[in-house]
Amino acid sequence: MDLLSLVADWIISVLAGMSGTTLFVTVTLLMFLNSSLMFPPSEWIGIGAGISAALIGENLILLFLVATAANFLGTLIWYYVGVHQSQSGSKQSRSNAPAKQSPSYNVIGYLFYPYVRWLTHIENVIRSRGALGIFILRLFPVIRSIVSWPAGRIRMALIPFTVASLLGMGAWSFLWIYLGYKLGELSLNLMFPFALIAAILSFTLFCYAGRILDLLTR
Image (cartoon, rainbow, N blue to C red; front, side):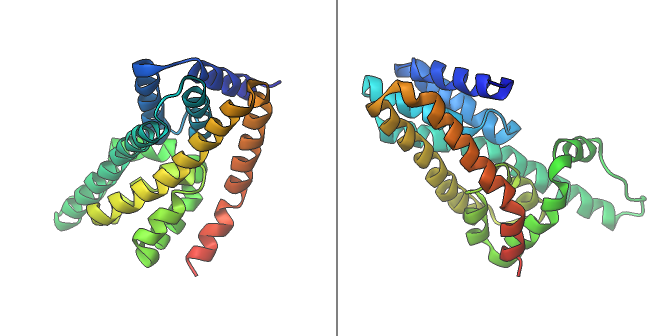
């Protein structure tokens, strides 16, 4: 068992053992971190939270709403970072000062470096597909977490961005929370194998993400 599998098993186990306010606060924090820092994976969070809801009878819908809202707030940070950089670039282009990258741009560039080849594709998808593009991109691992920055940089209107993001993130969160809930109803002995299957599924979607981006930009 590698380190990633141990971390996944630990996160799911800890969440599965929580209840009440502690569960909701923890899910809020983890889902916020997921969309703002891309870790821990929302699949693990959703499965663990769903298991807990099944075992102790927590409100599944309320848990889903909290998870979705926290996930959106985390990604909203990157949207406004993109908007700010776009505005800074516009001011710079209207002045006589030579253009240069800001320190924040360089930091963000390092954070997104492994996915930099996708950013242009993502911008093109948002320009051509609008809110529908945002919704679709929110359904793919990793990409779902970096959509906001390009959307902000091209100054996509906040309302369609918000609606499309909430729908996409809601669908993604509900999938994993509901699967965790059904798993909790069956047997905790299936927890690790199920988490492994979830990781394989997410990795498969991640591998095909580039191809999906190409299809959406045609």
